[in-house]
Length: 592
Image (cartoon, rainbow, N blue to C red):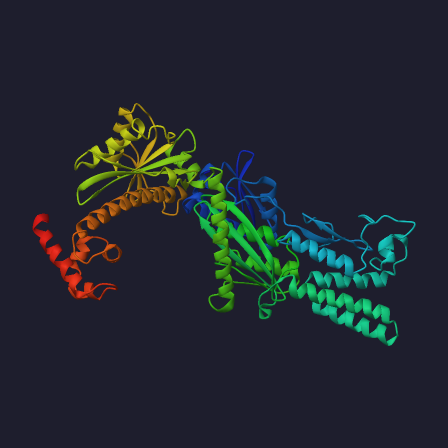
C-alpha cells in the first residue's frame, strides 16, 4: 500500500487494521492513529513488510487508549492476524466463578464470560484450585449441587444436614445470612484471610457468650483450617512483599517463554507460563501480547506489577489495570533490591522452561532452526539429520577429518567419527577425500544426511561437492565461514544472519562440535607421543607422567617450564626434574 492511498488519519486514539483484500494482516492500537500509521512507511523489518503487503487500511476511533486496548484484543482474537503475536498454546488456566444470582454458587470454569459473575484467577496450578475449592466447600455453606441457575428442590440435600449448605434451593436460607457467607468467600478468594479470621473470631466469642459451645467449636475448627491452608499449602516467600505479580522472559531465536508469578499475602501462589513462536516480533511485542491477554481476564488484580523490561504501552496497561481494579495499580521495572532479585529468579526459571521446550521440539524433529534452514536454503524437506565436517592437523602433519551428526537439532555423539587422511597439505583435497570415503568406505552404511555442513568457505564447499560427485550422490550442502559466521552457498552467494537466529546458532554449534571432535583426536595423539618420549626417563613412573601431562598438556609446554617449578610439583624432586630437562635438551637437535 502506498502512503498516498491512505484514508484520512485522525490524531485520536483508536485501532487500525492492515488488510489484504478481506484478510486482516495485522491489528494494532495507537494513542495517535495518524502518527502510528505513518510510522510504518519509515520503518524497517516487519512493519515495512506489513505496509507493503497491505492493500487496505481500516480505522476505528475510540474515546481513549484503554478502550483501544480492549478493542485491539477482541479483534486479534476474532481475526488471528498472521503478523500479530499469538500465544502458541491455547490452554486456558482455570478460574473460580461466583455466579451472579440471589444465592450464588462457586464453579470451576475455563473461560471468563461477560455475564456479571465474579471471577477469581487464573489459577496456575489445577491442584491448588481443587484444594481451595474443597476448603471453601467444607467451611462455607454455599449451595453446591442445585445447579446453575439454581433449581428449586422440595427437600434439602445431605449438605444441609451436615451444616455445609443453607439450602436456598429448598427456601430455607436467610438471604442476609447467605450474603454474609458470600462476602467471606469473596474475601478468602481475594487473599483477605485476616479479615475473615477476625469476623469468625467475633462470631465464635459471641456463640461462647450465648453458651452455644458446639457452634463456637465449629467456628474454631473453621479458623484452624483456614490458618493451616494459608500457612502451609502455599509456598511461603516474604511477608513484606504482600500482593504483586512479577514476570520472567527468555528467548532463543523465534521461540520465547513468558512467565508470570502471583504473590498474594507474601506467598507465591503459582506460575503462569506461555510459549510464543514468531520470528520477526520484538521482545517488547511478545511481552505486551502476554500482558494484554492475561490482564484482560485476571482477577483480583494486585497493586503492583513488576516487568522484566519497559514496554511502550506501560501507561495504557496501568490505566487498564486501574479501571478493572477500581484503585491504583503500579507497573514498574525495578532496578535494585529484593524486587530486582525476584525478576532475576523469574528470568532464570523462564530460561529453564525455554530449554525444556527446545528439547521437546528437538525430540519431535521440530527444532525451530530446522524449519528456518529449510526456508533459507530452499530445501525440499526439513533437514532432520545434519552432518558436520572439519579438517584439522597437528602442526601441518597428520591431517584428520572430523565428522559429527545431529538429528532433530541434537548431537548424536554415538555416530561421531574421525578419519586419518592420505591427502597431504591441501585442505581441499583432504575434504574431498573425507566426503568421498564417508559415502563409499566403512561408513557408507550410516543413514544419508539431509544436509552437509562444511567448515569453511566456497573452496571447501566445492571440494565437498567433488567428493559427493565421486560417490555418485547429490545431497544438499552449505558452508560456514568462520570469520564472518556467514552461510556460503555453492553458487558463491553468502547469507548473513543475526547471531541470535536459530538456524545460524545451530550451524555454529555443529561446526564447533566438529572442530572439538578433531581437536580431541589431536590431543590424544599428542599425549601418546609425550608418553612414549617420557618412557625412558629414570624415576618417572605412570603417576608422575600423568601429573606432568595434566599440568602441561604436551612436550612444548613441558620444555618451557622452569626447573624449579618442575621440582616443586607434588611427588616430584630435583633429581627427576633434572633428568626430564636433560632428556628434553637431547631431543631438541633431532626436532630441529
